[in-house]
Image 1 (cartoon, one colour):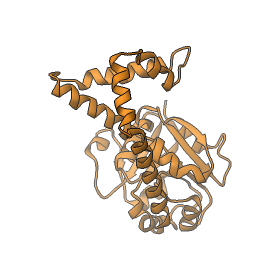
Image 2 (image 1 turned 120 degrees about the vertical axis):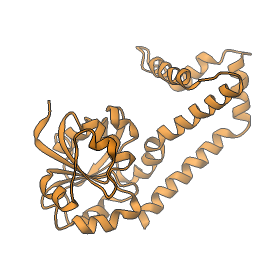
Image 3 (image 1 turned 90 degrees about the vertical axis):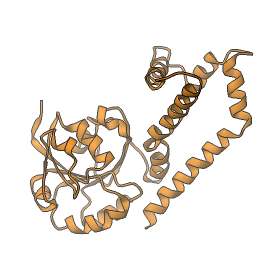
Image 4 (image 1 turned 45 degrees about the vertical axis):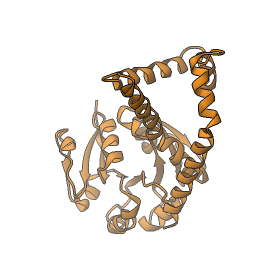
Length: 257
C-alpha cells in the first residue's frame, strides 16, 4: 500500500536514481526532474516535472545527480526547498558542503549500492538531525538496510560497498569469458546461479564466513586450491587493495572540488 501522504521527488534520474525509483515506486508517490526523460521510468506512470514544480510538490527530495553537476543544481534549488527533507546520494559531497550550498541542515547524506532496486543494499547514512525513527530512515529502509556511520568513513564505504556490485560483476564477467573460451555457450545464467548459491551458503543457519566457504571448496591438493594458489602468488590481492585505495582517493578528490 502506498503512503499517499508522502510525495518523493528525484532530482536526477541516472542509474542510481532509476534504481531508487524502482525500489520505492510501490510505496510512495514519485515524481522526477531530469533533462533526459527515461522511457522506462515514464512507463511506471511517474511524471517528469520542472525542477521548480518538483521542489514545490515534494515532501522529500532525493539528490541523485553526478558530482560535477551538483553545485549548479544545488544553487538552483536552494531557495525552492523550504523545510523539505533532502536525501543526498551525491558521491564525495560532504554533509557540511550540502548544508552550506542548500542553506539548511535538514539533510541526510546517504550512499547505497544498485541493490536498492530490490531493497537489498547496505546504505550508509549520516546527518546533523536525528535519523532514527525519521521519515528519511523509513524511506531508506525500503531500499535496504541503513547503517549510521561516521562521515569520515564515507569515502571508504562508497569505494567498497557502493562500488561492490561492479567488483562482483567484474569477477562474474571474467568467469563468463573463461567459460565461453572452454566451450560453454551461455554461461551467465549458470554464474548467476553460482552467485545465488554462494549467497545461500553464506546466509545459511551456520552463517560461515567468506573465508570459511573458500576453505570448504578448496580441498587439499584439489583444483580449487591450485587456482587459488596461482591467484595469491600473482599478487592479485595486493592489486585489488591498491585499486580500492585509488577509488577511496578519487572519492576524496570529488569532495574537494
